[in-house]
Image (cartoon, rainbow, N blue to C red; front, side, top):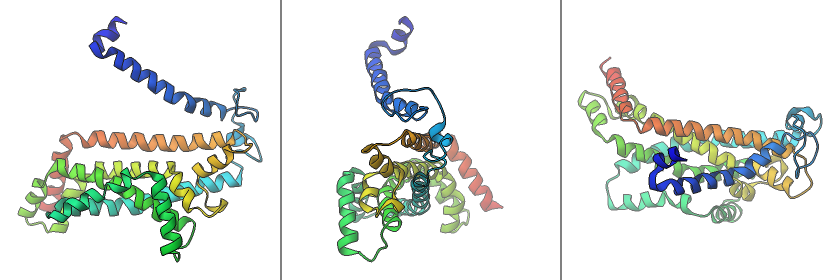
Length: 289
């Protein structure tokens, strides 16, 4: 206790409350994960540990159940496509907004925050009405879900990349231009290497957000063939189901935690000023070569 008091000083009670809150928040998740290792079908009590619901059960485990396979594949496919499309668009938009100098640009920058601050239920209803009343020609199912996820997650990319652009400034790109590089060469050889940690962090955030999304996907899904993991878990939890859903949720939790951890590492690296010099040296070396 004395070590704890010396370390945290007068804020020791705040630190204690924070840790209690973290433990309280994680407890339900840990219980759900533990139930996924039950040997029986109970989802309300702890039983002897087993991998039955991961691959042991020949009919309803995550490894063997086709409906769970479909939900898992749909989720990963949707997240991958969202990353591949939303990230380049967000990076390009962030660079454009960073260089846009006019009164209109202030409003445009503010509009980029709208998808982030808008409640998901409102965003989902709006997208549903758009696709049913205005643009009904867009194929239902995965294409609509993909457009919805791109629209929702691209703002995260813009915010993260713009923060990095503000931190590194314009001096490195200007130095490359002074050495004879074209605008595209300066972007490719100098600016993009400096933005690499922010771009990687954006990719991981987009992946985690897409994998975890339930509201927008539920409004734009068309049935079991396009269900994602969150939708599958929600529909199964409302009825009688086995711990296989807990096992599926645990698998997706591991994917999400991995993405968040990688994003945190990238953001940590992005905050180190030493990376600026390395990126500039590499880019300018490429120009001189």
